[in-house]
Amino acid sequence: MDEIHKKLLEHIKNSIFETVKVKKIGIAFSGGVDSALISKICSDMNYDITLLTIGFHESHDILFAKQVNGFLKYSHYILEIDSDTFPTISSKIHQKIGTDNLSWNENCIAFHYVSKLATSLDLDTIITANGIDELFCGYNAYREAFSGGESKINEVMIAKLDNELKMMKAVNLIASEFGVKILQPLLSQKFIEYAKTIPMSEKIHDSEDLYRKHIIRKLAREINVPELSCTKRKKALQYGSKIHKALLKTR
Image (tube, rainbow, N blue to C red; front, side, top):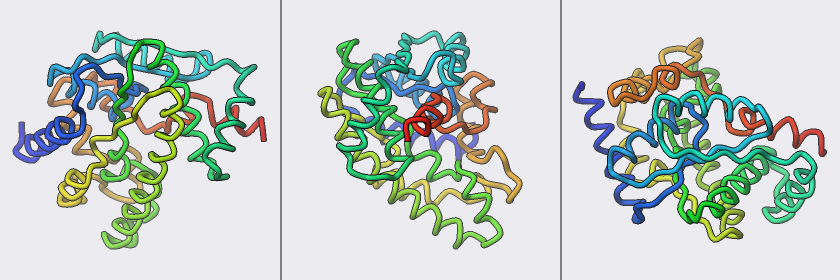
């Protein structure tokens, strides 16, 4: 393993160790490179992990998560969202968090269901891979910013991190109704500071770069995350679960 990948792995492990104080944890799992990477690392660190996947019937995330876990073979549970009760639940969440921000509503709805699934399995701590897309140029916004140089990319990164940290407070407000805590080890201040020192060329190559997060994908390969996860292009939780589509119908 290259030195840069060793260092990244060490920092991820340290951040998990410092953030996650219980051994029995659920992991929000879509099968994509971020959630597969954090699942593999937590398992290698001897956490007792259960993968948690939510989505509407035959949604992308449910099908892909099953496929990826066919290789990982971890404990894995799925909750299919009920179309009949979805409008009532989404409306209550909208009122609770008090914002019309669509992404915030979608993520809070998703973690309502993840928390519900966790509670049914006697899990009260859920780990997410939030932070990777923000810190390693996972979003298309980074491609759009590329022509503006590193200063423009860093500007986008600061805004994305600020939004994510605030949004996860709203997510935890929803999860707290189930007595569940959502932890994001890769949004710790220490990890954020480290990740910002990684060369931009390890994250994004140009404005046409459809994959991005290259150092994350390389590390995932190094620790034997299934190849189909390592090469998977980003599909945000709200789209992969079909929550975005369902929520637009209720508006």
